[in-house]
Length: 202
Length: 202
DNA sequence: GACGCCGTTGACTGACCAGTCAATCGCGTT
DNA sequence: AACGCGATTGACTGGTCAGTCAACGGCGTC
Image (cartoon, rainbow over all chains, first blue to last red; front, side, top):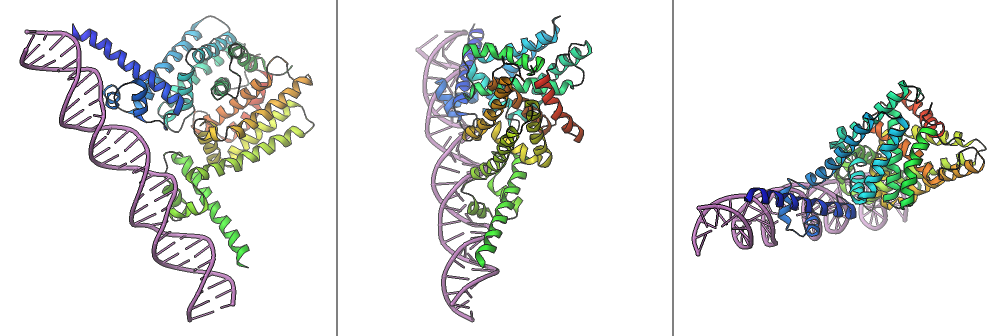
């Protein structure tokens, strides 16, 4: 059977190109790099990138959607648990921090080239990005109804503050503005929830 | 005296080009627009842009630095006041929100094309951007020493969370993810400080 | 009213690069 | 071992645009 073997081989080659693209995008940035850089990094010919992807954009789209959908699922799953809202937020912060620990280059690409690039790719994927905000807002809304969270801050606003705080910290690590050692990652999970839920006040 | 009159006229023409650039960058994005778009918007010939600016980049650099330095001064001035840290943070949040109210297009350009574009212009201006984080961190540090803020969250982290929360809300307004009416802007000043200082917990 | 300076013009050039495509390769099939 | 087909190659094309520059115009000066 050639079909099964070659289908697996094709998927593998596609992965090789995607992984190379992560490294190139992280190093040079999406707009600055050339498609030939991705091909070189992957050790394949220029044209092969276009055999597996319709365009340079589609490579980045694929990387983003793959990972973002995993995150959305993780948030939904967390929200389904019968635990306090504070713990839900901690689980979400943990998931994002762990994503960074596991593959910092991929997270750099997603944040820098998509999430924070709202004029180019962010625009295309705005609906997907918004889904994350809305899931978090929903957690806050339910916590307010249950009396866990104060009712005067709107859920949409709280969601933006929570997500914005996490993303800013990741951005700090990515660009060496904040120390990003192992202990710092662990600490950040607690700090972000402590700050947003508990507040800085003594 | 021709020199004085023409110097004023030159400064005015330069301003016309800068203001046109804000509109074009906000509408089309820095990378997507052409220098000829700026010239057309300003009602001047293509080449004149290069009479007043060395490059397309320098136009954006100028817009960013002009505004960012005003903000840094405002933060320094706020910090010099003999008021509680919570009020200092409120004043900073107010300043940023008012900047958005006064010129949303300019704020969009600064946030989208510089502050959140850490791979391109953000890199160039990283030191300037960092200054803002450090000034905020300093406010937090002093508040911790004075016993106003809890001592267990590091000042650098708190600064990132505070700034990240504000920027995320602005980004929400810019891309119509959050309602950005007059009352919403007013509310946001309170909410961001309430959330970061007071916490979401009931 | 002739001269010169400098703000202004816009056609042009050189470089860059995404995407195409015809040619080649190599593996499985018969 | 000859055939076929999808994977692979990389030279080439077409279009885009930042930045240059030679020429022009209008205002002040003498």
